[in-house]
Image (cartoon, rainbow, N blue to C red; front, side, top):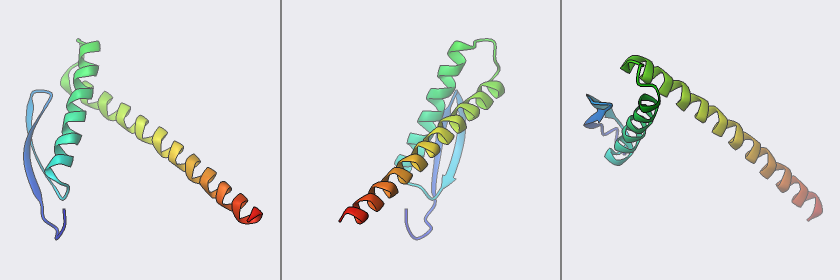
Length: 92
């Protein structure tokens, strides 16, 4: 979104209603919250004895783990692109 416009959206995550306010589009906010809800339901279905707070923490841990892995992959890809550019510049 532009011009500092805020999107205000009420969403359902794991059976609870949350009002999300942010500068991202409604589509983006819905996508994020749907992914969180999906991950919480996945973890909850495999660990029926866990309460909602523990499921939320495990969801956060899993999400940050995935983020860090992707961040490292991106770093490696950028390094490879840089090496390829340097190699092409030296050969060109």
